[in-house]
Image 1 (tube, one colour):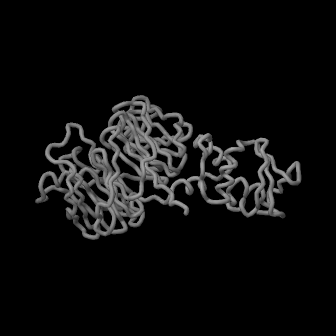
Image 2 (cartoon, rainbow, N blue to C red; image 1 turned 30 degrees about the horizontal axis):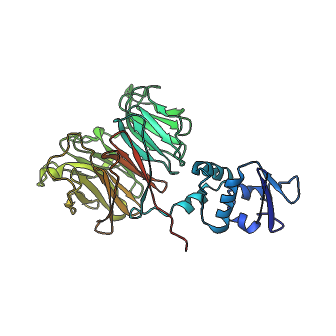
Image 3 (cartoon, rainbow, N blue to C red; image 1 turned 90 degrees about the vertical axis):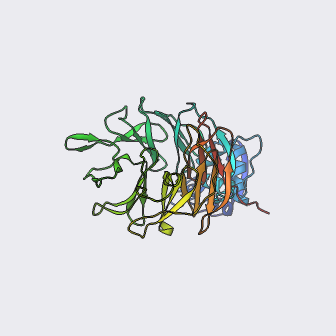
Length: 410
């Protein structure tokens, strides 16, 4: 910062604050203070010894103390959302987040709060945003929440049920629908997360027919081999290290499960597994979810009893090694169960089952902790992003927010 003297005085909403250039330097160059005192701005104050900012003085005091000590102490008379908005204005939101929550750790997650949805019994998917917000699909409507968990204008697909949702960045959401988006032909479109406005609609044609669920500039189609059902995929995952796409067709959509890795550079299937002809018992064959773990060159699958299985991607033909037999449910499954789902984040494996999420760690993926909230019923989906874990419950569309507390400063 181009500050000539160490002492700096601010008039914030009529209240005088005095601090040092060293303290303000802790805000970083991307903050308001970094911009104010940058040599290129050549900012001049009406008074040589004072800068006026027309903002909330109580919040400014909290944020100034954060820059001084690194600790975040919010008085009971200041709403947290107000403080977050003020921190956003000053460019200090990252400082607030790092002071309030520590580095993501599944074994140290604590339940922060629960939010009730607006479409009881119709929640289908939840996706964490890169900045700590999330979006929730309720039938044909997608509700979007920012980092402060304030709801933005919802995205309505006009009675077309949402198939899947994904974040492109902090402001872009891609949504695919089962039939056609109510705002035009095709099965996929890009929307603004903050306004809900349609940004781009993907049109894909092949042999003069409009195709769905394909985005970007279309150059060709991948034709599935005989006997496989890539077009009915329940799960897709891009593998950055191998430049391949994992495609999985899971139970109960199909009686038999298919998992494959597709290399689009030469339009080939480089790895495949199916439970057809498998000697395993029926309950072991019913794979509910699958996820690739590139660090260990393996694919993890989970069945309806939360049994974990692993397959080696380095082998041309996959075979399941079932290593977890911790049954959380015995006997018959409920009539409308919430099937187990998997997630991998920062070296930890997560698996949902009923109203809990299990955390597995280590080379042998040992169960180390379990997150459970009985309010809202079984967990139908969960997602991790922006240092938060979001869990969507089946009843009343209640979703929980789990966060890792910051280490205590002694």
